[in-house]
Each structure stands twice: as structure tokens, then as C-alpha cells.
Image (cartoon, rainbow, N blue to C red; front, side, top):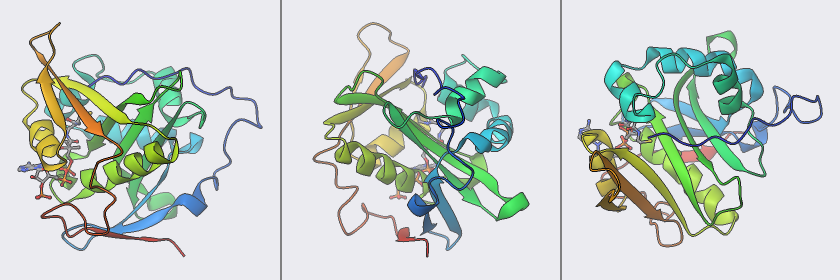
Length: 214
Ligand SMILES: CC(C)(COP(=O)(O)OP(=O)(O)OC[C@H]1O[C@@H](n2cnc3c(N)ncnc32)[C@H](O)[C@@H]1OP(=O)(O)O)[C@@H](O)C(=O)NCCC(=O)NCCS
């Protein structure tokens, strides 16, 4: 899908989160296979992580995420993806490793530049990390942030042949319908208020769990 990104926040020093920003909001999560990952807000200094992450995606996954609109992201797009104005959206990265060995393995975001109560979201998990519960954990963070903003729903427009999204959406009990304007697209919608993603028990089949980082 193609999330419409708002213009990146200005690069004035007071507007750019310092490298440590968001650390309090970092959480350690455990995937179904026992792998420990950290999910935290994206930061301006994640630009190289994001570049490498997108570069590492298979052509199929990249097409599903960007609908053929992007192959190699420009420097400006990478900046828009990593410098997020909290007034208009959120973005979380999933990382493994520490310090110089930190590696991005997933990312999720929503954007509501006009204060929409039904906003557009996107989630991507690296090929090697799929089907271990990471996408579900990333969506939980989005739903939590959306609820905190009083939002009603999140939606995504995806390729009709995106079987990964179809299964994922079914798992998360999203509504879906063919795009009446474009038969190659399916519109997915998640009811933020009614979603069971934040129930104390994770959605069925997922044993992934989370805890705040000390
Ligand atoms: C869609 C996507 C984010 C799912 O991420 P993920 O980490 O694989 O999702 P999870 O592991 O949390 O899987 C959730 C459920 O989806 C289903 N599922 C996901 N991938 C599957 C696969 N390859 N085969 C079978 N089922 C799969 C399972 O039913 C799983 O349910 P379970 O927890 O009961 O086993 C990931 O496949 C992806 O990045 N796809 C490419 C980009 C994209 O299409 N993004 C969506 C539009 S923006």
C-alpha cells in the first residue's frame, strides 16, 4: 500500500528528536519463536536503518508495501519516513541487536495529517521475519496510539493479490472490500475501538508477548 506521508517535520534542531528520544517508549517484545526484539518510535537517526531495511525487502514484499511506486527510496522520502511529526502521525520500528549492530526488521506507521479519525496505516515486516507474530505486535502499537488519540479506525489500500495482507487482515479481523474505483486494489479497515488487539490475551494463535524495557 502507499501511505501518504505528510511533509517531514522541519529540521530545526528543536524539532528533531535526539537519538535517545522515544527510549522511554521502547518495549521489549518476544516473538513466537522466542526471539527478543525491541519496538520503539522511529527516530531521525534511523534513516540508514530504514534505507537498508527497504533495500533488503524482496521485490514481492516491496511491491506489496509500495504498490510499485518505489524501488529505491529517495533521500527526501527517507527523511519523511523517519522524521515524524507527532502531531500528524506515529511510526514504530522493530529492531534486533544493539548499538552499531542494531538492525531494523519491521516498521509500522499511520498518518493523520488533518486530524482524521479514520487514518491510513502501513506495516512491513522483513521477509525473513514474517509469520512469527511481529506484524501483529507492530499493529498493537498502532492501535494503542490510535486509541490514545481518540481515533475510530485505520485503513489501508492494498494490491488484490497481496496474499500476505489478506491472511494478516483476516487474522486481525479487519473488514475488507474491493476498491470500487480500482479492481486491482482491496480496501482494508480496522475498527480501532473494537479491535481485540489490546485485549490482555493476544489474538488467537499468537504467543508473542511484550514488556516495557527497563
Ligand atoms: C502483512 C505482514 C505485515 C504480516 O506480518 P507478519 O509478521 O508476517 O504477521 P504475523 O506473524 O503477526 O501473522 C499474523 C497472522 O497472519 C497470518 N500469516 C501471516 N503471514 C503468513 C504466511 N506467510 N503464511 C500463512 N499465514 C500467514 C497468520 O494467520 C498469522 O496468524 P497466527 O498468528 O494465528 O499464526 C507481512 O507479511 C508483510 O510485511 N507483508 C508485506 C508488506 C505488506 O503487504 N504490508 C501490508 C500492507 S501496508
